[in-house]
Length: 604
Image 1 (tube, helix red, strand yellow):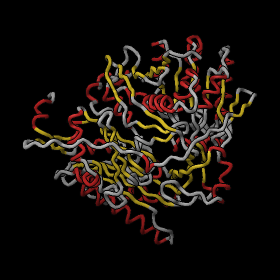
Image 2 (cartoon, one colour):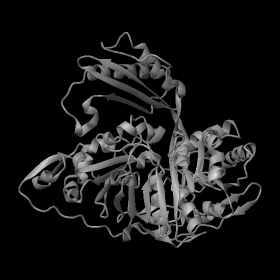
Image 3 (cartoon, rainbow, N blue to C red):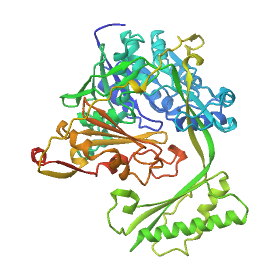
Image 4 (cartoon, rainbow, N blue to C red):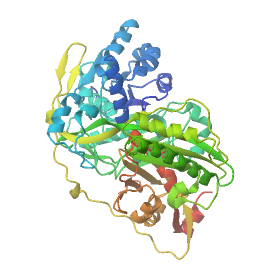
């Protein structure tokens, strides 16, 4: 451990299925101390759990071993880079076994450590008998035999313990995404659990790089600025100092860009309340964060604050909740949208008639979406009549045969449809299981975390915390609009960057102003009622109660949370966009009234 230094951490993966381009980039760049990989989402855990049920040796991300480590491990070892990854999924021990075999096959001398203890599936009966309820909806614990996975979100200190024990490769199961970065910092700098501001700062660094190229131009509002280099987009590097301050950059010669806009969008991504971003090791406050472009592709980040973590781990369970199917047909010509809807409704009526004739229950849910029809976008709709649309018909039922029936009737209606049907030929979709998320809390003292060093197991120190009182948060004041008689209306996209995503059934929209002068006018125009109006076709709760806005005065950003708007979220939803990825694009078209003098000062 050396004080007064800077460590360089590369963020190489944001999900299971991510490109394997990052590691070669980092090795070519050189000078990195750590490369971290984030593979896990709630649904990923359920997919891995089903894989483990079929084969006890599976349940992790095998491409981490075959595509990432195998071709690169010799060079990783030569450069002395530490690897930290949650590729272990629901079976980190099996992942570690595969990695140790690879190390041996390559003739390398590397120590592999595994973090265990997040998997609580064997306690499902205990949770059911204890009347555990879902932390957001209050729903009761699902039937134990339907539960596929139960995993606690562990923190970063066990990862630091593994590195302290000399591990070269650390494999975890479920931990918070940013923990792979924070664990490296705790080890490198000797931080203790009460270094709250430093822990929060490194957690933000981890949050920014955990989605790979989303920090370097991926999913960026101003996508045209990086469009010609997306094929070689660079993956993010966090250069973190002993005091927790850090710079975001990327490997030289790669595509994309690192700007205040790209980093700012990613900072806001899926954070909920920016003054209470709850992690196992710290409660983060991002409201005073500052971003500064200090050089080309280099953004300095500071102003992060932290406080004591809570006494509980968040736990995510996934459970089977029936079956679903969905397929897409195309219609071309005049009144294409009306024809498509008539076709879809007729197919659903046919399927329902057959269910009724067989005394079978109705579908749990049916969704018809006509994509390309402006009415699909609610308050954003314009009076156009598209001549080409895609119609998606999706259904959910407890019986896989029932959901397959709706596909049969859609296909069988082909000769009795309105004109203009243009189906795409190929493999027909099959019924797939609906997996629903169930989140709850467990005391940290009830979760035993172990460090496996390849035969030797060490019990990690129990994590601690205090009660967090949301009511004591001091909310910052919004700057007022200065009076002016002359104003212009511009779409929000001219004034701000935006990015959106999901947390379960909630959508998160981050709006980052291009200039601090626009902040009061954006807030004035996008109040809770206006936001609710623009998403009224998705909202399930009364408006505007289902809309929450948060202000980050350090950057002037707005973070918006829309509750229960994703139809259950993930693969429990029948929506075309079950993760809310397009919601920022919808909101960025909202007209904002701003002073004419500010418009005149804007760059064309």
